[in-house]
Image 1 (cartoon, rainbow over the protein chains, first blue to last red):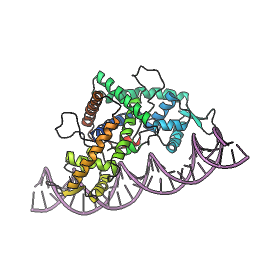
Image 2 (image 1 turned 60 degrees about the vertical axis):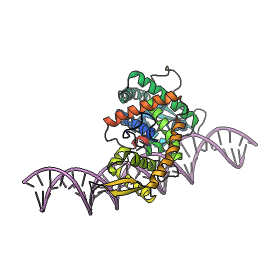
Image 3 (image 1 turned 180 degrees about the horizontal axis):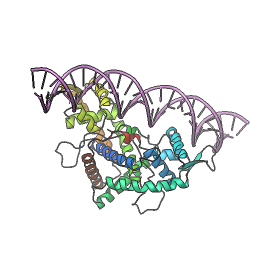
Image 4 (image 1 turned 120 degrees about the vertical axis):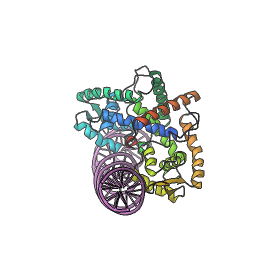
Length: 172
Length: 172
DNA sequence: GACAGACTATATGTCCCGCAGATTATCTGC
DNA sequence: GCAGATAATCTGCGGGACATATAGTCTGTC
């Protein structure tokens, strides 16, 4: 989780900027929580819900060479990924095939069914994202998306191995 | 933490916008994770770490009338809040005093020591937040902060009782 | 004024999930 | 060929969230 943070809608004062330390975290947590609740209902009837979608999406769009790369990208623990993939394999959405040049590793490939299921859910997820941002003007959405994206990239670059979900766990 | 989301730094394609559904979540998760790791070390030697800071900050700056309001704002479960406050009380940072007009409720008030400790940590937290945003220009920081703040407010308004930390837990 | 129902905080028990450690199989370098 | 590192898996532990139960208190009604 990590989740929400401190005290955002502070009483009054401050000219809309120069907030209380921790407010950024509260705002981030609030946005993320809103995002997740919408995301969750969008993929509710998918195996393993959000995580299942994330894994399937990453497998299709990023084609990671092995489970470790997949888990690292999603910041999912390897031991968790094991039984997470078990479910997806059982649902015939992905397959574990021996990796080409490393017999220790398994390559996760999507099944045809997996691709179709993913594309079906993607429209729902896109709608959920739009719904989340519906309060902003279109140019603001573009601004925010771009800035968050840039920020995420820089953090990603600076922090190769991020520890997964202590973040979400601590979200208020 | 909920944590990261799907596959952000997607291979190539797309003109920097119109991303893969789920990317927003991945970016949010990445930013939040980066935020938390910095936040965490900033308040590492505080009782209960991040949560402790959040609670103390909310108590000082928002002055919630009872524990329920405090927990709702931070999206912390009430049963968790109980022993969380136990630690803070033991550390002499806050006190449980009988609420003025409702003897069922306990008002959480900061001690003098609590206020000084908080202000000491606040400079560190503020530095951590600046560090997180150091990759952006100053006007971009203002833009991003404002947009996230607005978004958080709207989500907060639309979603009175948010479920806490499944968000962070599911972060990749 | 007393009683029923709702509400605050707390204690207890349970369940789930993520993490650390150990295990097996494999790759890489000497 | 052997030692050390790496990929996936399995097992056990612990923390955190939720449901339930309880004690004390408030609010409304008759």
